[in-house]
Length: 292
Image 1: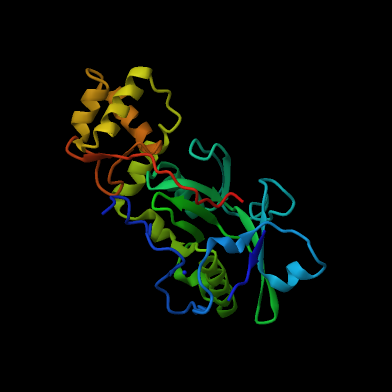
Image 2: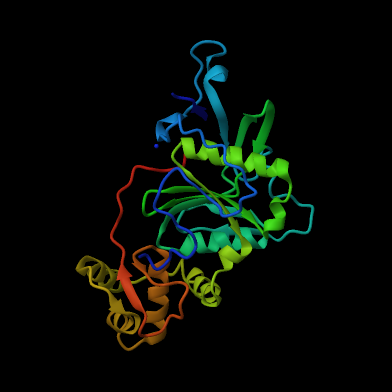
């Protein structure tokens, strides 16, 4: 892929899921800004590589994105050596296996899998090559995701702020942030504390994640569809009784599964009780995507 130069009250929002496009969301002032206000944000910059005249692509290219295949030789992210946690995670939302390295990557993958605000995501999706200050830079983003709002977020996962102490590395991140902005993506840096969130988030995400592949009966699917079409929130306990009357355990698991499927939403940062409010999630038509 080439990036072409040219002359712009949800319960899940506590993991930053911003509505604006083309922004760099990071509070650390050590990361510089390379914003060029003369270059508007537009998704049309993202184009497939093509050769019309020799040298034209190189002359007009801002950066090059290579889509990586899991296990490919050009994807040296998850290796056999080292001491990091490695995970292969089956995803119902994407229909793909997510291969990640490190606890932060695993936890963010689990959150993206079950959060109704995330329509699509991918771990370690690309290799991005670009020039910065006369030097060639190569960057491997950790995650990318498409939100229900239509925003695409390119994400760098770090353990703590100490992981970006190197000024040269911060400069590279600033270059990536500007490239993302110009194609109308957001660039984020999430620390482990941002991913962990409040104490209840981890337990809720794990409980929902375990039920993501649950097989639902036709009656259960129809009951959830009726709830979604009615567009009226209900307490968790009332909806559970409506879906599976007389079987609270089956009803609990069914609701967990439908949260993971993005059909209903619940506050993932609060304890899930019978009084928790469940909101229906209507289908969102969108042509935006990152699978190039």
